[in-house]
Length: 103
Image 1 (cartoon, rainbow, N blue to C red):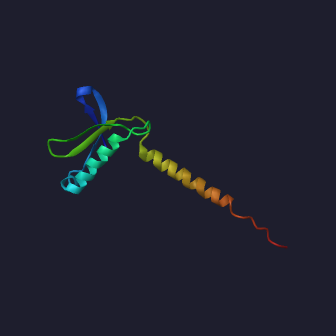
Image 2: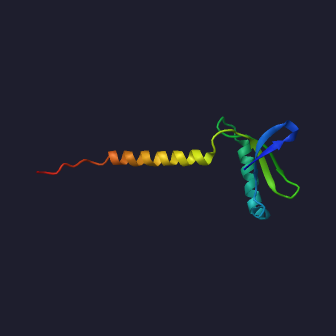
């Protein structure tokens, strides 16, 4: 993902490009285009809209999306995964039956 400028509309966009080496494989290109088309058809407040699908002069496929400002997904996912894992672990510990030794 890269930050790009959509000059015609004067706005910043998020740009997803297929990797050069991968882009030579037709099946990878087909999958990338399918991803762009399917994502572009989704409409939901929590889904980033696709603005454009295209091919650069060098033959690299791309699609542009609304640029969302905020905390990077990597940071959020890592934090929430850790929190969820530790919460899950602590809940399972709380469920362990307590056994009192017989005296």
